[in-house]
Length: 91
Image (cartoon, rainbow, N blue to C red; front, side):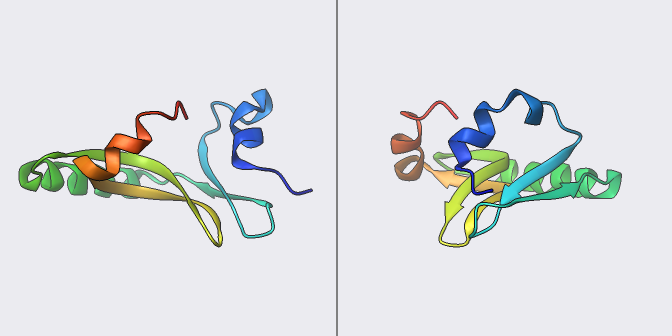
């Protein structure tokens, strides 16, 4: 079954899951369980980015639409220019 990211986000059965979901290029859901060490590393990277950032925003578990499907970045930094168009979206 091929789903769009908006359909996945709107599906009540997929809310509050204890793992991260992405979709591949065929619209199939791919799931990854959260590990404690992984979460710790995300926090460390976020902290380091907070020390370095200038005119931008730090994101954790940011969904990004790619040609291969929707991927979720563990940690990301976005410039002010990148963030401006994203503010218009609610998801």
